[in-house]
Image (cartoon, rainbow over all chains, first blue to last red; front, side, top):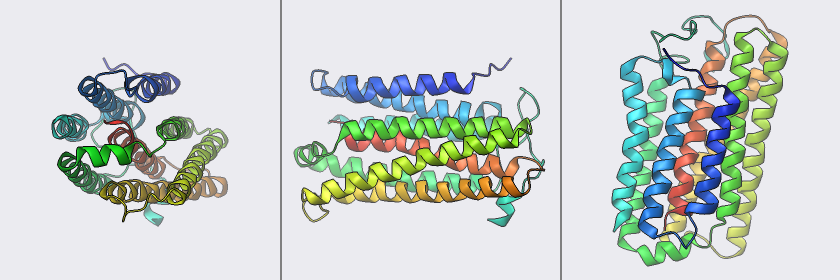
Amino acid sequence: MLTERPTWMTWGLLAAASIVTTWILSADSVDRRWALVAIFVVAAWKVRLVMTDFIELRRAPLLGRLAFEGWAVLVPLTLVVLLWQ
Amino acid sequence: MSALMERSDQGAPAGKGSRRTMPGMDGFWVFVAGDLAMFTLMFVTFALARADDPAGFEAARLTLDADRGGINTLVLLTSSACIASALTALRRDAVGQARRWILAGVGGGAVFVVLKSLEYAAGFDAGHAPDTHEFYVYYLTLTGVHLGHVVAGCVLLLGFWVRLGRRPEGGVVGFETAAVFWHLVDFLWLLIFPLLYLAR
């Protein structure tokens, strides 16, 4: 059974995650590498949330979901690896 | 464009179950894939260049206004939620409500454009031009191409706002396609922002 989140709830989750990322995780007091990982994990989750809830990929064919939601995971992961140094 | 503005019922979602097709017009997903490939290339190129000169890129990153970028993120997310609400209203045939949501969504896009323009003006005033550091080449390219998407999305959504005012009957696939584009603009920013403004 697919659960449908109301739009306002999706917006609230995305906004809260953005506030945490912008004004807490990016603070200089947070270790650079931990911050890097956390910021891109949150970004990947937010991108996937926009895809599943706003674009409604949640109800799309499996292959389409795998391709685009896979992109949402692979790209941030690649960026973390490249920026890790 | 005219095909996109038509509102046919073909491919419309049925209830809460899985659907046979992707949201919007199938062919549009080829454009989405191409767009994602282009941005992926720019993201990776930026990250590789940054790895070659971490100190220089970090110094340049610190000249950006992350607060303004964070506010822009909230503005785009809110605009995306408005367009998602417009689609829900349109499926209920509440065309008047859908048009109000579309206008609110476009308003969010306009705020983004204004804030980004002010950011560019402040940056150029402070001497942050592409010839001062490689970072600004990437910054202006990534945010500039994205800003072009925002403007195109606003024009597209305004087209639907006008169209729905003149001919409110029909299906939703055309608008669903425009909504996919608007959400694409939104989630691209969700990666551009941390990459340029936040990653230390």
